[in-house]
Length: 98
Image (cartoon, rainbow, N blue to C red; front, side):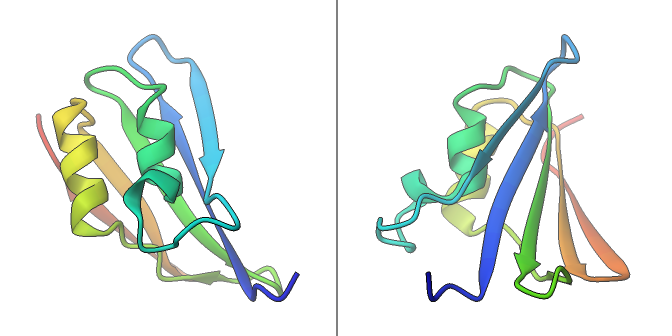
């Protein structure tokens, strides 16, 4: 495998069930259905929270800001907040709804 990183997403539903997903390998990486955050959203309900991380081969974190299409999908499913890695010490937060 020549990839230098992996992207994964974890969601917490309103009933506190935790669901997870990862980017699909072998698919077009520009295609939102293959993105971890769009894939995990299929398993969520309204008022869920999503956490997205890009993990490098050395175990460090890198920028995992969701693309505009994934944000649209998450907003349409009622996801309320998205947290994402920026680097080893920094995380970002996007509020989609209250």
